[in-house]
Length: 391
Image (cartoon, rainbow, N blue to C red; front, side, top):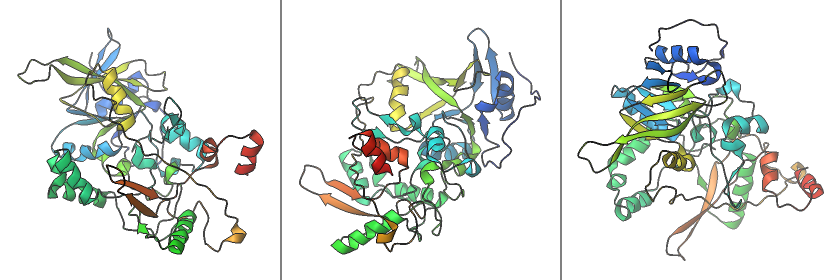
């Protein structure tokens, strides 16, 4: 059954939204209005009442709107109709509260409290339009030449050793507005630099994707000034983006071509998160399917799709982090500024160890944590002890 555009009164956000021409926010839709919105974006939509799905056709589907969103520009410029599926929701500068509770709930996977099964490691992962680039700490470090050579030679991925890859990194940095250093360093960075100087340690300044004189240490809760340039205001403007839309599984069919692969991917099944007004799943058919849902959620999606490759979920590497904390009374320091002012990570010190089979690099830097996140990481002694330390 095909659909014609219908007008229906529905309250939607009135704020300026850079992606308003591209985005379909399912939180504000119903079965009927969702179809209208998709058709307005130039997509063909057919209702299959028997299977209780809306069938959508496009050229390319990308799961996830974070760093993988960089591919959107190239594909759209080549004339492809691209649909980006994002489980999180869309927020702009005016939406951000900079408050820990609402921000973690809105912008992070599992509200930030996402741990391994044994509870020994906790992970931070963005879950919003822009993914990790919307909430990361702005550090924009190019891959070192030595590491590119290692990948090219040891892992036989020759592209990493070419000038084309270096050029691509330069283009990405230009578009997301990377500057070499922040002129307004946060309080914690000033403390670390003072320590470095006292011990004669080398300090490295970090490039970041904000203007040089911008002062804001709440990027992990969204940049209220809109100065931080993530994929949500750079790469995604030309795609159709479905928010609040969870990818359930890829549609695999038998491959009748002469290729080695027995099956080919022809589509994606998704469901709508937290909106009972949309009763149907979406079946998106495309020529090309790309999963860019991050290191944590890509493997589960592949497994739920029935893929059997033994390498799935076996090669995830996480950075171990040891945290040291200290209380700095304002009366005992002459360093200017507050903890919530200035850049988050603007300088660091690297330690390279050659004692093991591999070169191990330790980075000393400062994090930004709200009190609740900090409290989760405190060693438990008692309720009174925790309250005392937080105070």
